[in-house]
Amino acid sequence: MRRMTDARALRDAFGCFATGITIVTSMDEAGAPVGFTANSFTSVSLDPPLLLVCPGKNASSLPAILRAGVFGVNVLAADQRPIAERFAMRGVDRFANGEWVEAESGVLLLEGACSNFACTTVNEVDAGDHIVLIGRIESFRAACERKPLMYVQGQYA
Ligand SMILES: Cc1cc2nc3c(=O)[nH]c(=O)nc-3n(C[C@H](O)[C@H](O)[C@H](O)COP(=O)(O)O)c2cc1C
Image 1: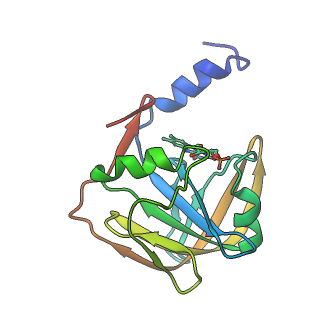
Image 2: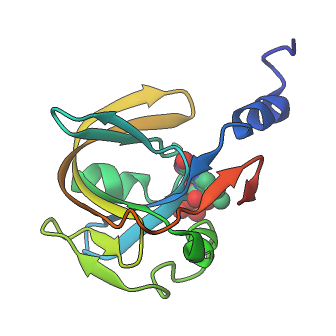
């Protein structure tokens, strides 16, 4: 077994767990959209309907997400890899590609995704270098016939 100081090895160990890929969206004080690529999405509860995602404390969009109190989660389809890549890039207009529609709360949801969730933040749990952001699902839609984009061992699959 490795010692817990080995961060690279721990990242690799986490990476053995295959996930989907999401884009988490919200808006800043001026109403401009913010968002980032996240694979830390987990379904939490059906009743009440809850999900979670873990933004890093250094993520540029975190202050806006916490301030807005609402966020969107878009589960990407297999053909949306360029969107995943764009939302992990700095210095680009992340929303330039893809077709975005507004949920009632104003968060942007991506057309062509496998599923979309519009959430209200109900809990922010401090967790090391990340925040566990728990959202109550206010509305959602799913296109379960679409194949999801997958991510495992540091690569899209
Ligand atoms: C496949 C993949 C999964 C990611 N998952 C997360 C995640 O769950 N949480 C997170 O904060 N950042 C995650 N990131 C990194 C963010 O997308 C982004 O690069 C980081 O939050 C920095 O955002 P910023 O440039 O807005 O500060 C992921 C990146 C990739 C490529």
